[in-house]
Length: 241
Ligand code: C5P
Image 1 (cartoon, rainbow, N blue to C red):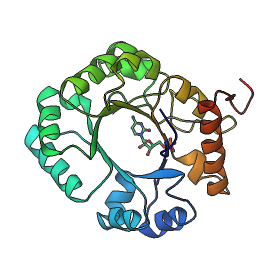
Image 2 (cartoon, rainbow, N blue to C red):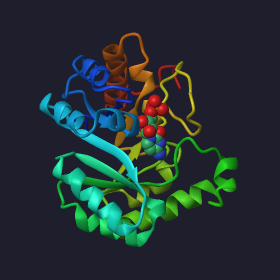
Image 3 (cartoon, rainbow, N blue to C red):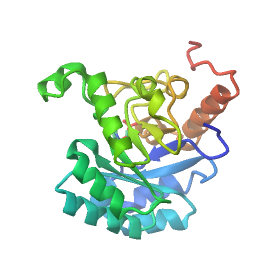
Image 4 (tube, rainbow, N blue to C red):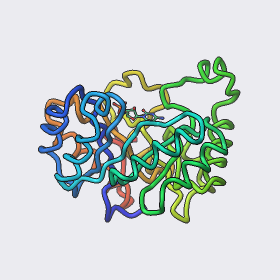
């Protein structure tokens, strides 16, 4: 992956448009893209997507659609109408739902599938009946590729397992990024920026390590610097690994 384009996607998990726009106004579209997820979308509605796009940012609409094929396809159409750069659906919706979503989203807007949430640990994955996590992620990622999606969301710890699926525009998007010294919060299968890129991630979703930092712009700059260093082959993690 070349860093001519921003690889960091900042997760704007806020309760209001005001808070999201205040943070966005301290960041640059040259350094990052922005993710609108469930909390912000429920609180602020589609207008927040317009407002962020008007500031020049690409928006990843992370609503993880998971419903019957017709409902998901129609929701994807509305997201496409909003002009978002990327959107997602749950791969667990199955092949017919994925195909319906693909048919609803013309090329140009990236449509990706969530494999297994990065908040699940191994015991929870078993409790959900999903078997062994790595095998389930691989099977779901393969299903997404088969359905013509543009990539998947996976844990950075699973990106290497999916290396052979990458390419031809099929990308790996990894949340669960935790720079050294930042708390895991509710995430369970985490990695640093450099580790995720080394494992083959194309885009990194980073929320609280940036948004909860006393200086979010500086926290983003540290992530971008770590990513660039990794690209140039001079990357070590912040703790020297
Ligand atoms: O704050 P943090 O860096 O944990 O934020 C991660 C973001 O990525 C959240 O907005 C979460 O909804 C999202 N996400 C995730 N795991 C997935 C898909 C999306 O953590 N599998």
